[in-house]
Amino acid sequence: MLLDRDIRDAAGNHRHDRLGQYADGVAQLGNAPVLFGLNVVGLLAGEFTRQYSGDRTHLDAALATTEAQILAIVLSEGIGYATMRSTPRESRDPFTFKLGRSSFPSSHATQAFAVATVLADRYGWGVGTVAYAAATAVGAARILQERH
Image (cartoon, rainbow, N blue to C red; front, side, top):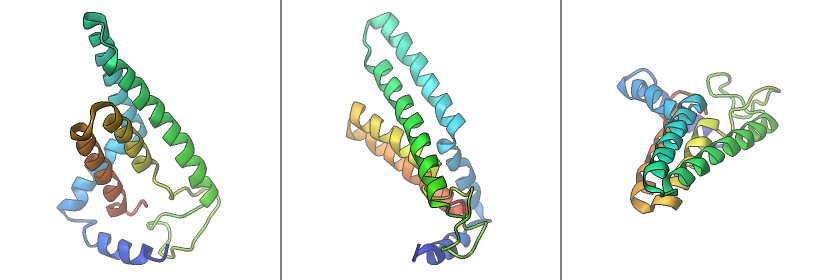
């Protein structure tokens, strides 16, 4: 909270330029319906692979990523409502707390990191590096959008 103003000011310089536009797109990777849709695609691909080769590796990974996403939503939303933090767009004071606000932690970033962790565990450092980079981009995008 002590660094909120400095981070907000640094990120605010990019809110309306091309970087801010990219942030809007990247943040969608952490949007629950979008990420769930990607998990469903993974489930379908995993089931297809299992049907034709008998290999359950991809299906089990897709089931685990879906479970991780659901748990991340529940935990991040619960913690968010308990902390009652307002977003930087709602209040410039980092010590503003209001019932019904859930800015901390970011549900988008939490879900993205939960899925990235499963992918890194199941597929190794190559896939993990890409997944963690995407999750980091989601978190940074939410800061640029002044949502967290």
